[in-house]
Image 1: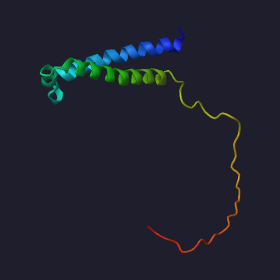
Image 2 (image 1 turned 45 degrees about the vertical axis):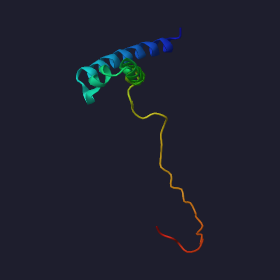
Image 3 (image 1 turned 180 degrees about the vertical axis):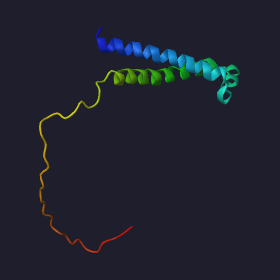
Image 4 (image 1 turned 135 degrees about the vertical axis):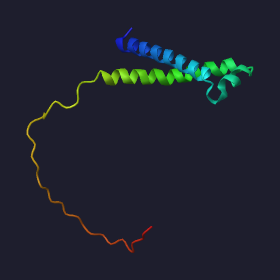
Length: 104
C-alpha cells in the first residue's frame, strides 16, 4: 500500500473518531433538542448514523489537511534566485472614443 494512502486512511480514522465524540457530545448536550428527536422517531438511529458519517467525512478531510500543512517547510529563508533590479518600462496607449460615457 502506498505511504500516502496509508497516511490518508489513518488521518480519516482519527477524523471519524473525533466525529463520534462530536456526535455523542451533540446528543448528550441535547443541542437543538436533537436527543428528543432521535429517541422519539422511528428513523432516529439512521439520522445519528448519517450525522456521524457526514461529520466524519468533514473531520477526516480537515485532519488530513492539518497534518499535511503542519509538515510543510518553514516559509521564507531569505533571498533566493539571484539579484533583482527595477527597470522602468514606458508603455504607450491609444485613446479611444467609443461614444458617450454612461455611468451607473
